[in-house]
Image 1 (tube, rainbow, N blue to C red):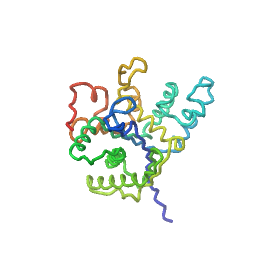
Image 2 (spheres, helix red, strand yellow):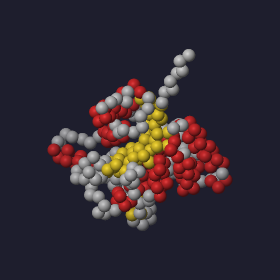
Image 3 (tube, rainbow, N blue to C red):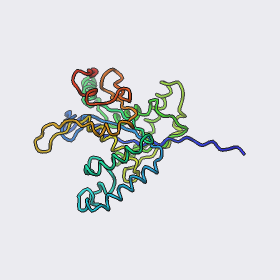
Image 4 (cartoon, rainbow, N blue to C red):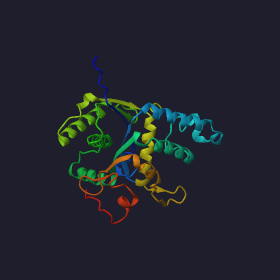
Length: 296
């Protein structure tokens, strides 16, 4: 009897950090970096060796914390608030909760592998403003930035498999499945053009759209992205309004599982690739004089 060949399936979970907004208000004024609008837009994907096992561990941790009297009465633990009791979300979770989640993810070791692309929206704003000046009918489309980062993220030579199960975090209420499928199609063409062979085209991709409350592995992606945000985004003190220092401790904790961070608007024309050989640190990315930003 001929033994069946096992198919190598790679499970990937995708989410974003920040927002793709550049302009706001009735007159479409630039709002990048202002209160409520991020300076960076980051797209991340997490390759998970055993999604069900990771989901079970996250759910077990959530159940344990919900039963802990230490957290009794805490606002973020109340079910009606739809925060920690609904799903882990780094921005809303208490520091004690974050520590437990980060410890869990760190202990998963090589079974988790994270990639991201980061866009500096100030550099993008300069390019988009130039387009506006040259064409009065031109209008920036935030979804176009989202789709271009998806395309960039999936056109790279990362781990190959026979098939790919891709779960992307839902954005808003509109169905964008077709646009996401198109972004993957473009990424497949880019990959073949760049490397001279096909991964199998869109036939090998199974794409679903979900949310963290339904798909626990998206909660893990959120935590990886939040670690990046803490080093990229400048935060303001809630009372004084003064800038708080960037934090790299969360990134350092997960760095062994960070395979590659492609900073699209930093350094040379193609951006800068941060990886094990060239780590992303406060010094390599933000210290003055280390590296010049590329011209828009």
